[in-house]
Length: 283
Image (cartoon, rainbow, N blue to C red; front, side, top):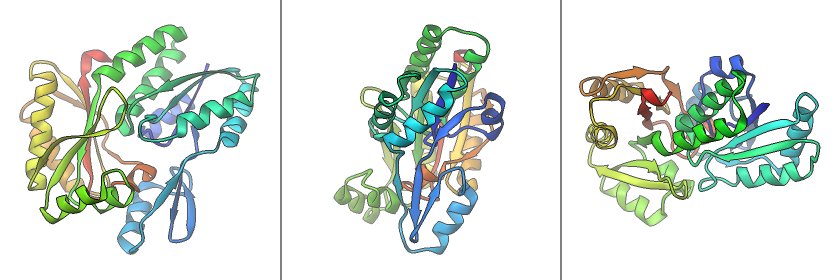
């Protein structure tokens, strides 16, 4: 069985290489030029471009035809494909994937809605890849992914709401009011529909970071060892503060810090700082 996913997942390059994970293209349009996230546009270049332009990026998902081409090519090697995608509550990518699979009857595609994005999504992809490589059957893999979908949490805060407002991820009026009041929201992805929701709101980025730490304690307590992956746009200072506050409260095993994928950062901008977290025992 092979895995197809999309660039809404943040995964370390080492994991991608180890398991040969295939990505459907998610594209970014900026300053009149189209880029493919993670292919001809890496995170460091993307955030540098944001600093140098007054324009806002826009994104587009793969077409059904592009998915069909991917499934057709993958089926030549192995017709069994597990297609894991960014939350259907945030993107139409999964719908396009299903339409594409209908064009390729030789491919036996199983679909999985991650109901999340970024590192929590990436952890699902990585876990599925490890299990499949170990010979675990599909039913057991899906049971594990369902467990992860319920127990892994992710959230972020950001200093600049302009990109969220422009991308339509929060209401324009609400966003403008928050900007004027200098509010720093903590945003997560709820479990029922896989859409953004507000975890909390604060009047400084340092208080919002402390708010994320407090929320982790609400979710998991302080007794269990936690797996944590920190992520950011271009905000290593905030990442360092978040790590310091987490380690003062929890026993953490940290994955490598990741810059959020350009196709996600297009909607959040460079000021984002966030995390993926779950009990280590889950893995």
